[in-house]
Image (cartoon, rainbow, N blue to C red; front, side, top):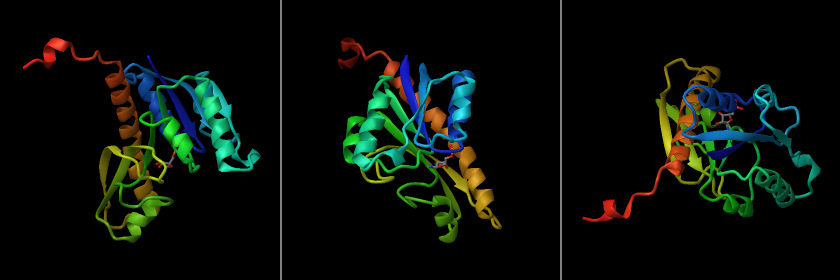
Length: 202
Ligand code: GRF
């Protein structure tokens, strides 16, 4: 079983979508073993508590530096021995040592077609630019914000007359499908048997 730790900061609708898929079709043999938040009052924590999934709070305000916060966060994450760490609306910039520690097993969802519209309010940026479509991206996390290798994307049309709320809801709905699907694929790939030596022969 692949062990999944999810990090959130707020509403947690992506966490809810991950858990719904875990309950329904499964996550490719993966299972959410803990949910961490930097905000003790993050509403999304309710989704974990309802299912009696362990919840951990590491408040960034208690630390003098980013590095000290990241060390404490990593220490807490490592207690769960994760195979995959998922940033699902986790609103903190992570340091290089943290991203390197989880290289290849740390992923994030972002509401744009990266490399377009990195950073905050990606939906507003796409609207303001007059785009006809935007979307969402699941990518590996590296030190540069929203810069890591793309794993998968979903395209979302921008309709005439869309306001920010309408477009944000459409993009979020696409994230709710894409992120659980990618998690399931990564977990399934991890659990797949290695090709036998015979199959590698010409
Ligand atoms: C998502 O759109 C995510 O891409 C962005 O913040 C939002 C989080 O929503 N980073 P939720 O907390 O999962 O509802």
